Length: 504
Ligand code: NAD
Image (cartoon, rainbow, N blue to C red; front, side, top):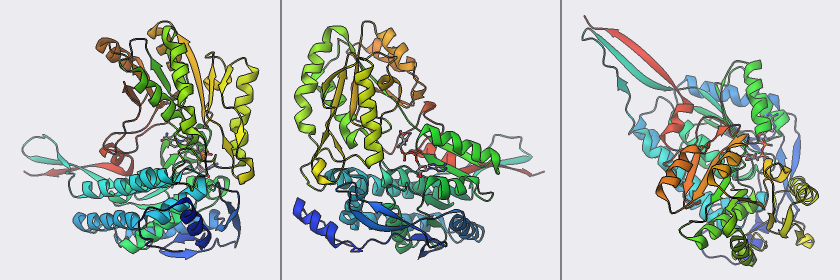
């Protein structure tokens, strides 16, 4: 694998040449070493860009997970990481973030090959966001203080936070590096040992993250990566008796299973970040209709619609519905799917054939159930070997339709008209999900009241795009529990200890 590729503006031909020259190492990282699965099994990792094989990846199972947990436990118990001075751990994690930036092009390329997202976003969003996340939690390490309780003078009560121990992180394929960094950065910063199980669809950047962590000085055994299938490596991690916590991001269906695994094993802490069906409510008094249209379209089609927080339900007040749709349709040419390795492309490929088939099934169900297909709904670029779907908009959608209720996780926008904002809020909240929501209005009172009434972990007012490592990210209801990002993420990876001391 070529590392330290000099950052420069590359053309599509450059990226393809670089892709063809990559020698990819798909072995696991356990106890500081690259190793194959102990069974010798591998699975074939297919590129989302053109369907070609990227090479074999270790198919880890319970035996490999057991080795990784043993290494992680030994590393935690002997304090090789947790007992280092906070300022030293900070320096190591800052170096880890530096190494991500120094290997920016290689990491972005692997991300695009694995999941099909446009290279421009792999560079600007995924690698940059992951490095920023590592650096932010590194900075926090020597700036967080514990507490002393206001107890009587003859006693002292210390309230301290301690690392939970061995953390299993199981992540999805839509933002492989970002989702991994949202878990590993606070978990490592708090002094834990971590075992990361990336999605079988996107294992490559996770493995490179582990190499870079070692190069930065994170001791062997502290950060392990076990690629493999959910039913094999993932379940073994979540069922393991010596794993203290599972930080999971993925579907609500699997999140439910992870809670059951915890119940069947050692009652490990489970933090779930799950699916969404976010509602975007645009009132007729929206202060900037163009901005609302750009944001609605840009947010649903970003990452080919494969974002947990994509605003897939667009509620538009009836008097502006027609104009809104016309302006949205006029923007679609800017979202034409193209070669993910072309720096000009703003939309790329769906991750694989299965996900492509899922999305196409939802498009068919929208048509069958009576929604009006206003744009898209078709496959594009079939000759490329990748799976591309034209940005799709359905009008005349009813809250009872499947496309309005279920998470599609593809480039499909459902437009629902409303007459009163209260009715839109009721329909928005009628979902089993509660990840994000938005309201667009020039009326301050309506904005506040609607934001309060929406049952979601994040509510946007007159925008949908703001995001920052400083704010928590997570959902209400079946969108999960706990929060990634911000200092609140430390709540997941630390135990709270009270120590009473008798003074007199
Ligand atoms: P998924 O649930 O199928 O898989 C997620 C991870 O779990 C993968 O690593 C997979 O291998 C593993 N897994 C699967 N079955 C398992 C099992 N039985 N035991 C243990 N692990 C198992 O989800 P996906 O298709 O990879 O990702 C898409 C989902 O992720 C969407 O629902 C999306 O909304 C959600 N997501 C949520 C957030 C958030 O922050 N809330 C962020 C990104 C994605």
